[in-house]
Image (cartoon, rainbow, N blue to C red; front, side, top):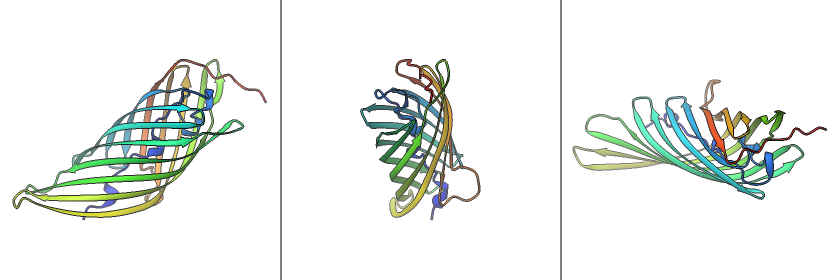
Length: 229
């Protein structure tokens, strides 16, 4: 049976959402740039790499985001995935709290013995909240730290196809765990860059399960104003 720890996950809590309304802090709870935009992510899993394109929009106190990704698990598998998330935006002084839910689908094709192929499908459901803030620093430059905690329920399907007998054996499994996402983004007007990481409650060792390097462009170029207490 395939070890589930070999099938890495891109965490929905790490999807890039950006805001079109509610000003400079509208997406701070996700550690992202304000107003709205698109971004590229270079992803490092514990056993592979990936690339993603993300986009998002917010209106009032509701945010919606989505992403599409391709994944390479060393030399043993290639895959693709996509996900969406919807969240509320609750301002608490300078801090933004965003409870939300999301869904992610992933497909991987694995290299196996010559007379068989293996395909895995994963459906991940997530619920939790993120918290963060955008702190203006100097003349259009700001820092956005964030952290999120989510409960994640994964459903797996494994299809083993025998090419010699032309038969498919299907099995399945489920996993439930907690994911912790954290990151730091720097923004200067319409450009933002940053890093984020995610770790699962069932992971071993001290390294994160997923790390992301982010570069994106916000819609518009509004600059945060430093607030004095």
